[in-house]
Length: 112
Image (cartoon, rainbow, N blue to C red; front, side, top):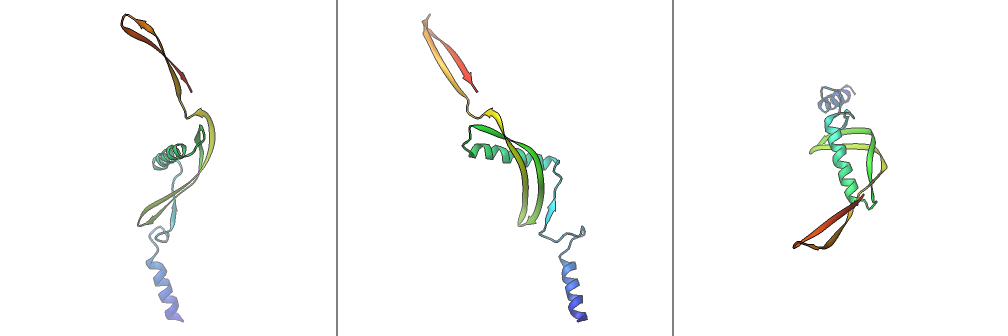
């Protein structure tokens, strides 16, 4: 019995780092860190490009951010997002006027 407990404690000690976290386990990240903010920007850029909604979505709050060291770094970010009033599609009308002095006069109207 003593040997079982000894080997079990040895096994657990071998897989726990100095912070008391198990290797390969999730570690919380600072939600306000520069890295998390950059990841959120990239997530929102990709999300807005992939959805078919004509409006942009914006991040409201980072609810949870964790990092897990596996065969690299696995980062998980849970966000609260909301639909904005900004439209993705920018359309414009180019209107050509009559020819004056060998040149066309152009007017452009942009709608957002």
